[in-house]
Structure formats: structure tokens, C-alpha cells
Length: 133
Ligand code: FES
Image (cartoon, protein in one colour):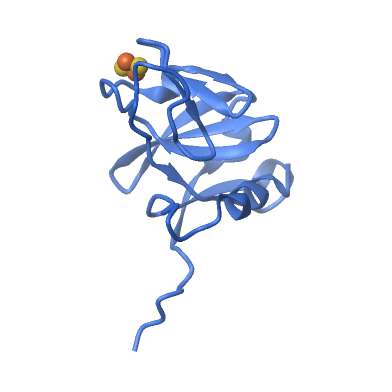
């Protein structure tokens, strides 16, 4: 019998020191391109594709807890993936992040599946990603 509340599987994405402060790093997570974004408020993971025209979000500007698509300027909330400005109107999947290790050996691990906001608390995700910064 399986447990329906199993912890999500996490995948090692990169070393924290490889992610620029107030910037992002494009990583491949088992065939899925994900942008690892480091802000003053924590580390986030968002699918590396704008929901408006499928360009790389990892090439956009990071400001606060948002990333801005370089092509038409939509901003997305890194905590939820929700578009905050037009023209995008569809959320981009985000992934739970956790940090392991210490100092320069800190590793960014990303959940194998996007966060399901119908069942999970985003606040838990946010706290887990910031505890070792
Ligand atoms: S392609 Fe990202 S806002 Fe248009």
C-alpha cells in the first residue's frame, strides 16, 4: 500500500555558488530546463520557459521575488509562477527548492515535479529555500 503523503523526490541541480546573486542559472533536471534563481529573499526554481511565447526566463532580469521575461516584459512571481504583468496571463510552473551542505559546498536541490498549489503550502517552500542563506 502506498503512502499518499510521500515526500517529493529531489534532484541535485547545482552548487549555490554557481548561481549569481540577483540572477539565475539554467539547469537541466532530467530533461526539463529549469531556471535556478537566487534573490536576497531566497533561492527559487521556475520552469525555464515563458508562458507567453516560450523564451528562456533564465535570460531575464531578477528583481525582488520576480523574474522578468526579456522579450515582452511580463514579470512572474518566483514563489508561485503567477504572471504579475501582461502580456503573459498563464502561470509558469515552479518547483520546491531545498539547500543541503554548508558554505561553498551548499547544493541546490529541486523537486522532481512542480509544486501543486492545490495541495501544498508555498510558505513551506519559501522557508526551506532560505534557511541556510
Ligand atoms: S515571450 Fe515572455 S512576455 Fe512575451
